[in-house]
Image (cartoon, rainbow, N blue to C red; front, side, top):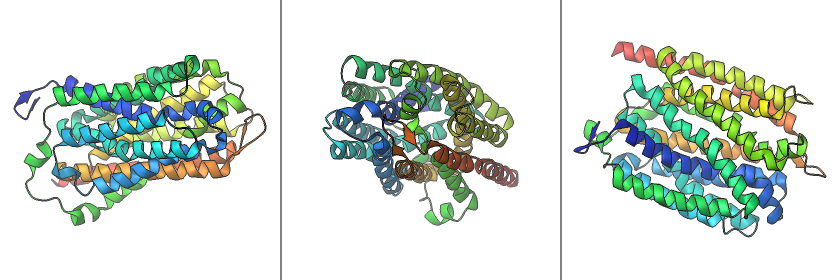
Length: 403
């Protein structure tokens, strides 16, 4: 593809944006499996780990809303670079934390910049890839989550074991700086959204469309159902189910591998069959995995099966929904739309993390009390998604037929 007078391969663009997402996602997801390690070192109750997750997602939601006011007016590469630099500083600060308040501040800084970095990454892919090939592109972009699970989280856990819990934060900050330099060296200026449509995008036009609101509601459903459980999985499998700490990296490695393969496969299914049927299957499968692993006592399947089922089902649901969401805004309003969507993601994640911290209590020995209740809420929320997916997809198809 030709961008800003330069010929750049699609694979290069995808690799760079996926690298940004890898750093951004790993910065967020590694905190949760590392939680029991730094909680012990910093004298933080493990039932409060959800607050640390909320410390990232809350500020990320606020910054996403603020970014929506101006993000579509600038070169996307420049916005991405500023967001990544701030994320690097926040990650570095996490490695310097000395108690709960300092860790909360560090995670808040990371969230302020990490939220816009996510939204601009999705906007770049949506700008450059047509709808008929966007499912595959989104599968690659979201594969950063799998790579973070396959390599990033196990490496972070291993670094924490052989060194200190601080080492993963410092190492990721260094990697983020390298990726940011590569973005500026290899990625052209991205102004396609400015060239396609000269008139100012209308807030009224965006907010008056029911399909936009339905997509944002679906976004909240997806992230609320996920983050009721995700911040607590590491502590749950270790302290409630007796899974050994030294094997935790293997759990994330295997789960990430299955998730990565599923995401590439799911992207092609979405391009062929549509988001609604694929995403609905994923939502139902996720509800079953949560029921078997977190509601049933004892769990109906081993820990590895619980985690793999959870990761694969999320791949089906998340790729299908994310691909559908990219088709809702026009090119000119895409950055604005995705910034608000990112804010909703993070606000939902923050709320879910806070709810988890309120409903859970740490028992003697570290076991978490209240997981079945939390999981039941997650299942109920998850099963709202298929209705929204079918309505959104039908609405978009009707609009396309009219045009």
